[in-house]
Image (cartoon, rainbow, N blue to C red; front, side, top):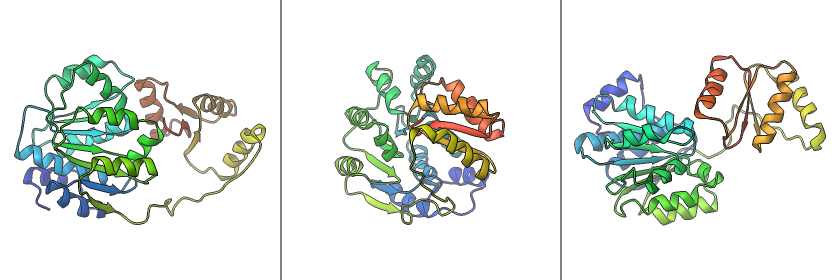
Amino acid sequence: MGLNQRLLDAIRDAEYIEPTPIQVQAIPVSMQGQDVLGLAQTGTGKTAAFMLPILDKIHNSRTKKISALVIAPTRELVDQINKTAIDLGKYTKSRSVSVYGGVNKRPQESKLSRSPDIVVACPGRLLDHLNDKTIDLSEVETLVLDEADTMCDMGFLPDIRKILNYLPVERQTLFFAATMPKAIRAMAQDILKSPKTVQIGVISPAETVSHALYPMNEKIKSKCLFKVLETTATGRVIVFTRTKHRAKIVSADLANRDYKVTVLQGNLSQNKRNQAINGFKTGKYDILVATDIA
């Protein structure tokens, strides 16, 4: 696909064997400098699909300014993307920085002052840095909006529009979403210039997941949840709630029934969020109760 040898060496180290369909379609287009509208779900390899062309461009023409900005909805996704940038760019001398809320701004300001090549950020904290003039996006060549539909659900579109005012008009934009609601379609039309559309399959629920709907009165929700867990749960379980308050109630009820449970919601510090996610990954907790936009 025309990637430089240093990236190919990093790909080999990461034990990537064959490119995924979205990588096959998106990487050549991105490397030509075209805008991309990508429709793909999580787990399709889209992070490498947009990060490899960015790293290739940086390797071939280094500057002392931020060259690429990636905006994503959650701290966890920002960390994941930043790790991919570091892993794939380890032989290119590129530098990537993650920016998100819930942690002290000072260390971020220090890293940003050293002119990294790539910034991966959540919208809210990025706006804070822009308002404080601790970040300069005036020479960004590539903008990536990842999981744009999720950012729409979380109410970030006004923040994103403000951020766009700090970016050069002449730039490459890569826009990724799993679904295309009206607001997302309108934004894509506004900011993309003659984009190449890349769609992987039909956007639908994974075939490995079964779906069931149980309409019920609020008063019996907890009882029914316990029954479902007792009869169907065979491993780790994620329970989504609409509000932070509800997440706390559900997790407390489950803990009272001796389930190993942890909670993930927006008010937690980054350290607490990491503890919850890592505990769930390692099996310390069997159940993770989370707000749907945590």
